[in-house]
Image 1 (cartoon, one colour):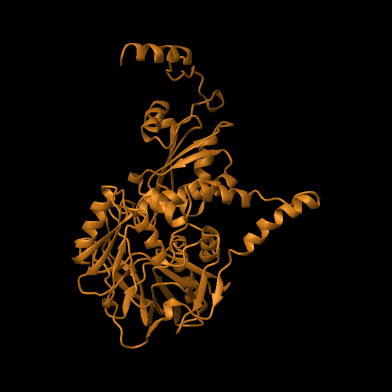
Image 2: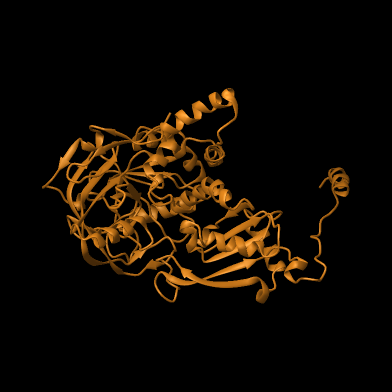
Length: 482
């Protein structure tokens, strides 16, 4: 049964021994970050700070910060279950005969239940504040010493495509400037930024409406970070993940909907053309992202539940909570990648690569230059375009074992022959690129080389003992008392 809201998820975490309540005062300025960082690095629990300094609103952090917690969030024994469900839907074909069509009906009916459901009201409207409110009433964290201030780090930011009218939900950090304004960190490649550019180009309005929900059921929160194609509704995907539609409610002051079970909702607008310096911010790269000019979000109305929870996260030197969230994305979206690239057997993004810096890919190699075709295809797949380095190996290499990949790749490459460089878009947070949003990428073909690729020398086998000898020595090993 899908979680009704964030509170049910908290109860599930506590029941599973995955939550620790902190009953004494801890400062949201730096101290909560240090707690959360230590906990995730030591494989510790999610943390619920019941008395954050300066606020009556408890703070939840590290709720997704382990494989176990991701499974609890998605209500599965393994995230591979979600991947299998996706594969089943992707592989659906209209079957032959009446019996085959009847068997498909339950799946088609289930698909219809994923779409968001508009309701007349919800818990997020229990308290409505249109004048007497301050963003500083929320225990927003200053995460790291050089941060420019306090940042809302786990928001669900809703906007609407001005051309199609379709909703988008993204997770874009919000630096609090004062009681009623924040930065809106719309990196240029994100859909929120695209909506902003389109509205500006249309010239029909000077304002773009925005709603920000903080804290909801875990599937809805998680969907905000998914690398989905443009105009694919994240709340529909959340319905798929939770096998039940997300209930959405109209905002009070803007023409947008938010999850009805949200803990806190900020309603307002971005003034088109208004920019303000945002940052620096201690980012998921493990370095501070530099300050830059970003739009300003003006908050007109705050609604929230009675006694709300504030859900947040921190990013920084890996591994942190975002690694576990990204790891689940990697497994869940592998079937989608394999639809377009069926030769891909597996992928792995090590935590040290911070998602966009390194992808390890194993393929079933079928023709000369196949590895380079796969590199080019990945650089053309949505947010995978940011991948700074792609290493392609043969299907018999376990990419989940970084040590094995390094051993075989380093042995298999002739650097001049097997490494290629290309130019293209890079992540806005890449501080090493020559220009913001534009730089180079590297592809490494670490597959066995074929004669058709100009390699005429013999290719040696990996050293392995025979199974027969291993079996005999298994017995002798015991006999020797080893």
